[in-house]
Image 1 (cartoon, rainbow, N blue to C red):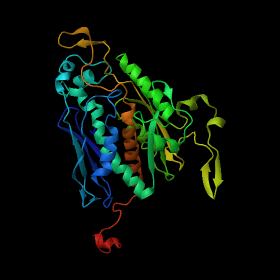
Image 2 (tube, rainbow, N blue to C red; image 1 turned 90 degrees about the vertical axis):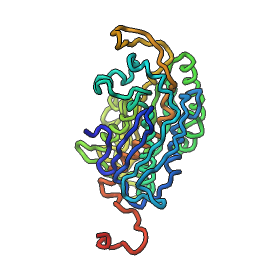
Image 3 (tube, helix red, strand yellow; image 1 turned 45 degrees about the vertical axis):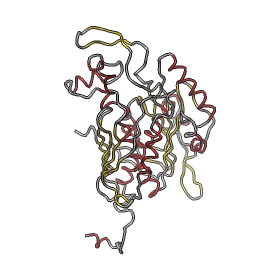
Image 4 (cartoon, rainbow, N blue to C red; image 1 turned 60 degrees about the vertical axis):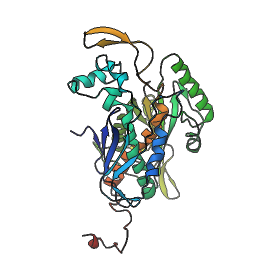
Length: 378
């Protein structure tokens, strides 16, 4: 069983539960010699934390990362990297009723059946968005590895919330504005409307979903291992591991179903002696391989299932239908906090495929002595 393991060469093992002692990851396969400090990871973890309790959960975790292994004197050693954050702001008593009254559209009941009632149901346990803190830790390492070795950059931002969609912006706009507003939108105008939409839903005791767009640039041609380990297939698998994700599309995505071949095809051309696509409806992936064009994907997130409104469920003790309001502290919209998580899962996948393609060596830069001759490593 590999349900908690992702990757072939850059391998991520996820562990922890929402109200357990900690959540974290083990990353195996990261090359030796990558410059890595605690701050490189902490920066992304801070972006995953709630920015404003008006639109997100009031649970406040410090999420200060602890690197337990695999880093020495500011560089990765080639050994497995184990890193975690501790769970401190927990109120497990809020979830005692959940053990017998499963929350609609949560995994509570289904996990109860699968694991024979032994699962940790507090805060959703293993199925909580809390576990994505570990994803972000691994993603921060992957992003740094990709940028320093291949110049690959991964940029995600909120494209849509509750039907409010950002329009007329560039990738540079997204880089500049996404973390200057609490909803992580690429423009200030869209940010204001999205925030109002979340507040309006929360005021009614409800929630809203949305869409995150992610772009990766400077990819080489040929990342991906068809036919079963295609680049887009593995990306979709990684992104669908994020709690609340309901769909993934690349390039034109579902719009392609209404297009003709002549509309959707990306004509090839030569620019400065290099073959390029004149447009990018494929989203940077054709035949499961990267095309060298920007990798463009979108992830749809459902509205959070935990809402203040009364909902119908069942009482497993009495086997009768009941109504109840979900207890605990919850986000009215998870989309803003999922932006660094989407970046993380994309980076993890790209790092894995880059290593599989032989584009990233096992040792990035030998430290001390002349180790250019590989025989000296024997």
